[in-house]
Image 1 (tube, rainbow, N blue to C red):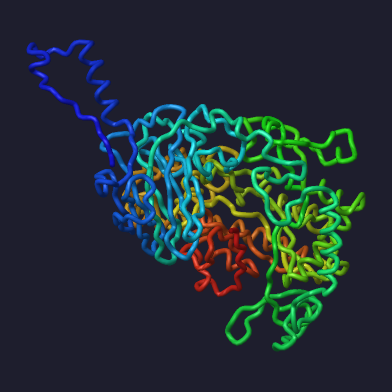
Image 2: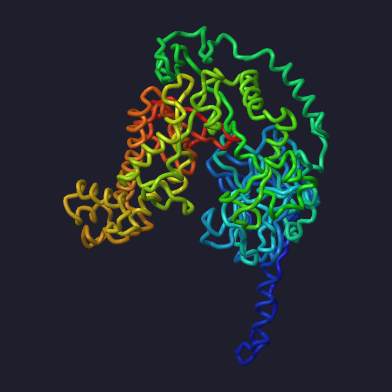
Length: 635
């Protein structure tokens, strides 16, 4: 049920002279505040007027009710962004130091990844003035949850905290860190790229005091092995002997070697055709279908796991020391597993740097002894083969695996990065992130140096076990639903006379070649730009874009992508001619149809990072690319 205050009374009777006194203003403001203060929504009286649906429908049901006898079942259609919105007549005042709490039930047999967005302005766009959180609701499960939005909430640098007695704490996935909780303009429960019909039941939507203002409930939640202390489970490590027992049992299980059947040493399919070996991996069409081909000429299907490395597994300690029940003496036998960290995406309490401890590597030393790194490396390879994987995925430790394929006899992917490397000019893109300006001549220097320092020094170019090379990762170019032309727009907002405006100068030259004069451009764009010189000044594209503007934005983002991919492809062709170029691992926020099309002109394999349960996503245009594709699934 939604409760709203009502302003009663007759203004003329209140003040027959028609003048509003200061006291009356205070009374009116008090009534207005009370009128829009958020109160519990429990659906006992049906669907409130504040609720609307987009590519979904709502039905009042008794199943899943947690507050009273009624709840709202939302049936989501197959669509990119099906949603249910809660929008007040004006704004909601949640109060201060509060959290939004709700109960969600999944009545179906399929997990549902729910996204919750809350806005504190009518200009919110999902990133600015918005906070978006994500939680997966398991089949036939009910989740009580809360989401903190207050400035008093203590940010420990985690997407979620342990149970607090108020349900599951759902942390921020992206968007603002805090919101103005006295000015909530909307919240919505939505699904992203929904490929099959889904349903969720919502009830007991309310505001509660923010549990994260006082985090004493997180005290001693992590034990000496890095495990959660609040639960027990089969296989939980209780002492060092458990690790030693696991080592012995694992050795027995791994004696059987690889579980891949009817394959050669590279993992190629022996029962299939042989297309002739070249000594390296390649991509080739067979019977009209793209496939990878191993060095001996057999068809190859790549499966693997990313991030075979220890460097990214440290846990930040400073600022959240209370969470750790027992940490080793920094000067003791496990002291080498402490390190100083900084520059992470979301540090606790906003700290610039702090002390971290690597529970994983410490447990490996407890398990394997002083030579734990070599033991871990060998066991990991055996484990991957035993599980039936055919490759080591991206982000493996270069020092341990690049150029060493013959030692492990398991194909691997190598990686090079230009996004955080080099002195080339950069352009602001989505969410304020910087992307390369490939029109800067210095970018060629960056690419060449990257290849030399990140790949060639390890001998990747001569290693037949190297399946291919990814260059860069999830570039923030803007996708089909995330302003695909933001790079071009931001380039035009620069002054073309500035030294680092390489892209803008290249774009303007292309426009000059396309149109006879500035008036021809104005006719196509529906604009009144005074001259080419005027266009060189900082320029903002109109919000309402003509077909001509959109066509040229599309042309220029292709031009940008072509310069980027061709520069990398040219260097790889010279320095590593036998190694496949695997692209840049597109994510949906940086993979417009135009950019994918250009990418396929230069790479050997187009790669996609998919953050959903299904790889069949509307933003992936694999069927139009005529290139083999590889999907990296993040679930």
